[in-house]
Length: 162
Image (tube, rainbow, N blue to C red; front, side, top):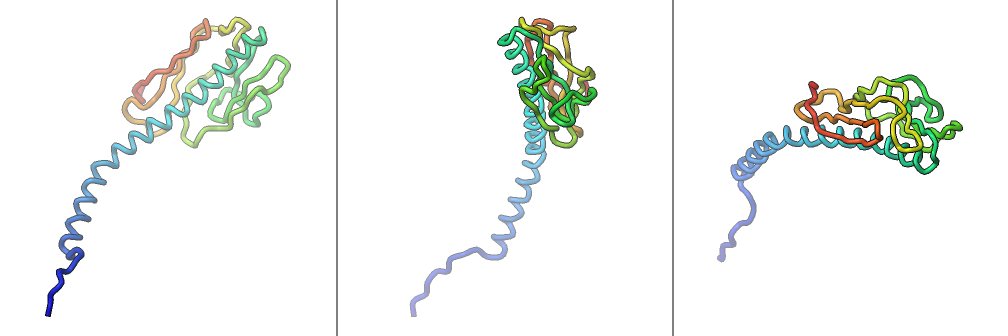
């Protein structure tokens, strides 16, 4: 009688493999949470910066003031809570583009009711600085958005506690 070697894993080998996998996942999970936080903050800041850049370029193209403001209904300006969504408005009230509210837990520390770019691409008011992040933010996962009087917009990483 010829004996054939058996293929497969023993129960002990399987348990060791599962244990090693559990340890590796335990080490990788916190790093993944940090990556997700970073990605969400970047997406939030990029969305609002896109709106400001669109408004600035439209203001220059049209040679007229263009407004960015918070909007609940994506048709008219409403209050100063930017986490409800925002719109880019032409001087005649036409909505150029709208954004719905970001994911739950978003924090946008911009307190003014609107941001207006003039026909030269600059702000009609003072320079603006605000933060964008999500609740539960840790480390340097928040974003600071600066809009200069000239209209230049920059985004940088900052500590969540700032």
